[in-house]
Image 1 (cartoon, rainbow, N blue to C red):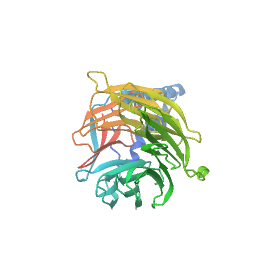
Image 2 (image 1 turned 45 degrees about the horizontal axis):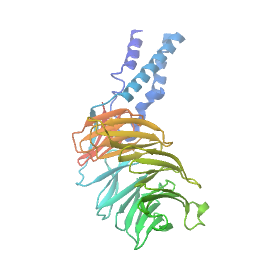
Image 3 (image 1 turned 90 degrees about the vertical axis):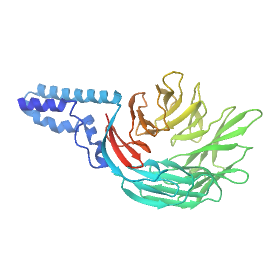
Image 4 (image 1 turned 180 degrees about the vertical axis):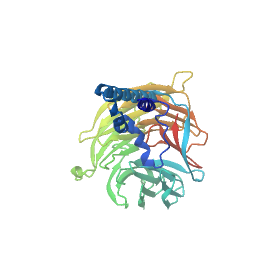
Length: 419
């Protein structure tokens, strides 16, 4: 009996629950999450069957479930201010190398080429190019790399280069779909062309915008299936700067319409520098001090509109959330962050003080960092991490597993566990 009671105490101990040895493989990081589903305890509690009484058996199970739930709730609302390095994979990267999370690995790119590394920082493939100022866009496991104001386009995924071509007009902006099809905003002598291009460089569709009609495009967004596109255009009116949000459909149902335009909505004395797809059927236009959510079907229409009292400094989103950072009125907290659902309803309103150079949604969390500091928030408004980092951060991302993250620096990759 003493042995069984000691065994039960070890199971309930918060001090040892998550202290197992670090897993070797990237894909194994989620195994500890079995504590949530109870799969681990389902096997272990068989050892307690000798207690005999069904009531005692059920009581022990209930205690275990309550203990695990309490620990998980505490962990998810706790503010972590430190970390431990669980694995380090060295690799010397040249200054100026940039990083993007792609699938279960990372893209490293710069002006002279691109490579893909796995979770142990081992190079899986690499390709050379010359792009002086590379710009990128990512959709699931496809990534677009293009030369802004230039002509070169590279399309890559986790397996390698899937497209490489040159355009006949300078590229202003580019977006990519999950299949590698790109939407490119091109500048010719008079107008702006928006061209849909396959991975081999073949033009699939093209629309032209003029100042007299939609206005001058400032941003475009492409749906993940490459069938829908929205453009934010600026028109100069009589003493005002107006905007037109134009909706295009490239699906087979509308191929007979050469303009591909299915609708547009005009806004007086407003400018929307950025547009994005939250899903294939929902899009958003982000202004200087507010945002609008649209449905993007055959009859595009406004679903929600939110206006702030201050200028938007940063915006980020995933398929369920759209968030904004603005200046705060607090003398001690420099920034105010608000997160909204795709229906325009506010989910959270929080403040923080530390500066940041990048902020993003990653695996359902909000990650922010500068060169030497990291922060993590939940969309519901919980600050989960706030800590300095001893090396210069190139990229800070979530990896599978409870409290697990990865930091890429010029000296290599470190997997960390926040604590």
